[in-house]
Image (cartoon, rainbow, N blue to C red; front, side, top):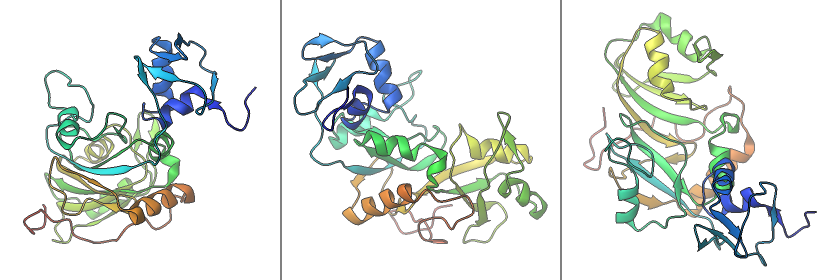
Length: 271
């Protein structure tokens, strides 16, 4: 029976930076987790972080003294995984260059054709919460289209009228980018299905040429260069955790500053 000092093994592994709770359960199934030297197979096992010695692949899993969150600017043609897929560039090389410890993992994904803000953390609970659509944490993107977006098609995109994989998309927000052209838009979502924005525009007959994420909730990409990391300030981290805790509804105002331009390191607005 659990007591005040114990927690489920999958939760402990998530908090020590071994991915989501589901990913932690897969580690157990693969026989890669041991407690006090004995391989464990019970997915419901309770552990005491103060007493039990939990190891993954023989390496001791330890609770961090304080969780950290990093912002990362994902470059173009890089897959959002820690292992290469078919020879494509992956995130592991950037982690190694920046000397980010192995316990830090990316929060969600951006497809290889997309660029911009990707958060990393060693807080498994926060990672899991940010990946759930009902957190209400809005993600903000700059979208460049291959043709003009007719005004008549905007409600189809924003009012939850499109279906992907048999389910309606949640209402989102769409406004012209600062250059005020009908091919450049700012889009805000608070769900993240696979290639969702590209698929939504395809359903209204348009192709996305460029997709660049500039914010996750209150955290903005700012001037961070492609391939670089920066640790979030205490204030940014607190605002992000607050945004997750508030569980905003789809119709509420998104976190962060509306209409703020995303600029390249050289100071020119990105298009």
